[in-house]
Length: 336
Image (tube, rainbow, N blue to C red; front, side):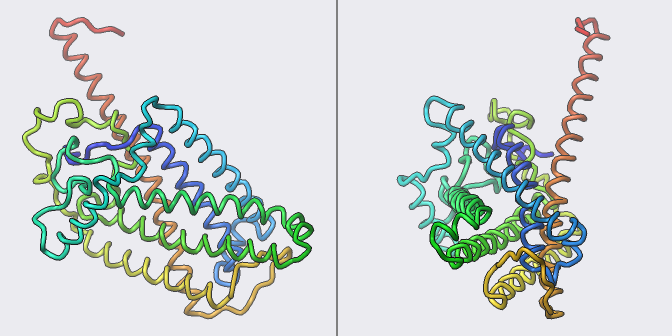
């Protein structure tokens, strides 16, 4: 690791990120195995058919509700001065200027990005905000989507109550279609998010700040003056990056377009009590399966990031033990 790979998030946040990723991927795999049952028939059969998939989907949904509720309560109660919740809210004194300067920077009319928009790119940890206006926007959109998905999912689970309350089956179908629409929007966002963070040339194939907390990262958080540079000059792009980014990017685009077009073709996301396989287009089938290959790659990368975290912490522990042993050999006191 270089000093550029400084941590930004707490241990709780990085753990929440990993658990949230696992839960969301389970919801995607199960939900769309039903929605696109003709194209993803193998995934449906792999998870035990319609009954098994619905059971896993509902269990993952309740896990998502419990997980997000716990995290929100922790964020609200973990600090008395309003942080870290305050770090997630828009900063109207800086964020609008950061957006304007970013546009100017992209057009060549500004020499650098606004301080509130910096992410890494050679800056030190104390020069970078926890979240830029882009990061705050992503979290806001993701939060609203998750909330609406959870509420609509609970209402779909009680379809009979909806039908009796509104005295119409159309009410239940409307919530099902709305749930599916939110899911397709979130699906495209997750594909892009995976591509953005996995294929960044400086961090490919895994951006470790999402897995290593700031307490676990040896960097200049304590005393930035001890480091002459951020370590950006030590970074080297991996030889496989160019091929990987082209293949992964093409797969992400193909998957997004295929899922979007298929949702329009099918005209909604009904979840029938008895599964009926429909005739599927070959090109649509290929496209949707490529898209879910991207999701599977995202799940694998998330698991790989946690493996790297465990390996890194093990190496750090071994180095600490060696240092303590050397001190004891030199006459220092070693506590066993």
